[in-house]
Image 1 (cartoon, rainbow, N blue to C red):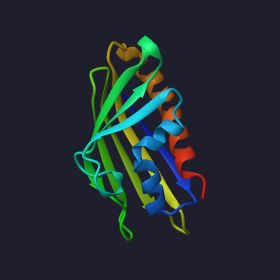
Image 2 (tube, one colour; image 1 turned 135 degrees about the horizontal axis):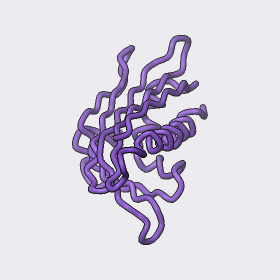
Image 3 (cartoon, one colour; image 1 turned 180 degrees about the horizontal axis):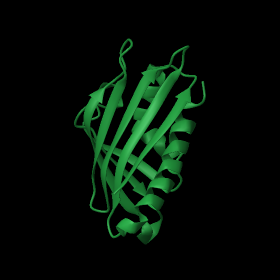
Length: 149
């Protein structure tokens, strides 16, 4: 199991950062070789508890599905941070991810992405490498999705 945390500040407000991070299909715009399909439950605003989406990553026989379900959905309101928790329901990639978005002092927002990731067949001795790669990938995803005004 690889546990990692990504923190990024943005010039966009918490509500806009939340929207950009939780329109799941947008993640495919910044993750190479990935396509995302919402398959169930997307309520108003594209999310909500029970929303299920699948990230299909890779090429040909090397592609895999990473189905995820939203189990916590609390958008940021007023001064309260927003929290979205996803549970990975796949057979190849399992674990969870939690996205927290809060207003930053002086404007903008702060995003904290926490994730516990397991890759089937990957020896535990490689967990730190998996965590390092995942932290880099998801750090880039967050930066690209929320950096632009």
